[in-house]
Length: 272
Image: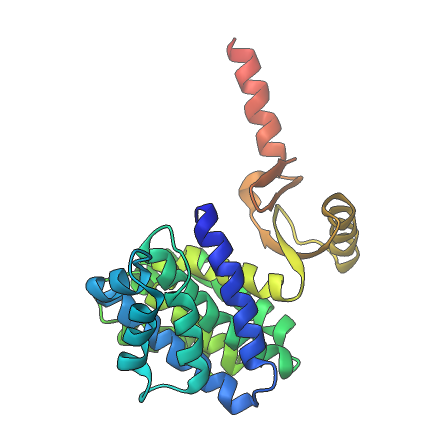
């Protein structure tokens, strides 16, 4: 996102927190569902999202459109958030969709947080992402846009088997549907990041040749916390192909201490 949209997104998150501060659990869940449906509508209706994101039009015209479309159909909190989104300045109409989707996800995460399940949801999302990543056929099926979204969500739910938090299942469905226009694999990774951010953490994706002990994970998390000045969620994936050592990615930062990298560097030097 460009600067204008980043600022508008930050404002929409603040509005979301105010709107849901005193809401009960049922209201929060309805809010998440309805806002997700609005995001889907905006994705399918090009003219509508352009009209709502057109800052050349008076605020009254855009909020009036929100009221006409959603005022009698959606809860007051959702309508109020959409009015806020409509009167913000977006770099592109797609950024407005992203903001609506992120708000829907944030509401689901708030629901998990209140239930004391936020850490579990983050972990369950990560584990399901790793399952899909390890099974190329499953990934293809989940990302096959020629298949109806409902069928792909049914497939994901059959694999989850009711063994995860209801918020996890809802977020996996959002990833399958194409969160932020992303394919499933990158969409669910972004959801893991948002769950970690809700816990005021960053995510460190770690690849190792053999499984790490809890003590090793804790030491790594503490070392990264000192570097970044915030808590770090360490997410470990075993990848025998790196041979040894570890590859750590935090955001755009990559630390490659794998034996494979050293071998490749040595080969490069010998080739010279």
